[in-house]
Image (cartoon, rainbow, N blue to C red):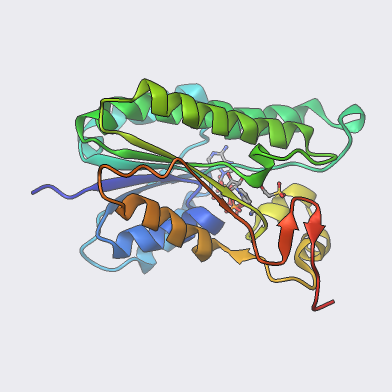
Length: 251
Ligand code: NDP
Ligand code: 8X3
């Protein structure tokens, strides 16, 4: 029987990287996507023998590049069973009236349009194998916070898209899951704020989730029997009672 292939976007860091390691151990061949291909290659080198790993330098927000990727990888995609739409980012926490439009474009292009294009183009393969799409939403896709208008809007869109996909795909056997984490210590805050000092302050005095906590949850969703679809998982660190309510006992 042919092996199953998982395509993971944003695999050069954080949750995507941890998910790649787990799915490799679970026996999937991998297609790993991100802009920093050197990081992907390093990750691929650390994954043991017996797993076929293809690394692809791709900006998921670049529609033409995404289309070219799908066009060029038809043979490898024939075994596509899992798409993990993880690539995403936040830029800044400025108030809307102070924000840069470029930052808004980057979040929408990556978190929303990129995720939608990847899903649309992967669907023919996933339908033929009764596959599974896992989207990285966020608690920011349920609760808005000050300075997060556009990042939150992007994650609300991910949740709506996930629910819509489930409806449109009813009867195909394809499962769709929205993973909605709270605070996970990855490069996310470094990308958002730009300095290590500001990034470290986000997690100071509390115990955040790790990338592998989320990867484990993703793997669990994939391992449910074919008749079980986890539509959404909301996962907070114990120290985060709600968006904006963080307990910092170690401070
Ligand atoms: P990281 O910054 O550690 O990882 C983000 C990944 O996305 C990187 O591999 C990056 O790779 C990739 N990426 C970003 N932009 C693009 C793009 N245009 N094209 C392709 N790849 C891209 O953050 P996380 O692991 O924390 O984030 C993963 C997902 O989880 C995101 O969607 C994020 O919104 C979500 N999330 C994160 C939370 C957190 O607290 N950390 C909480 C809730 C959700 P490269 O730069 O090489 O392209
Ligand atoms: C990332 C978590 O709380 O910074 O999605 O929005 S948060």
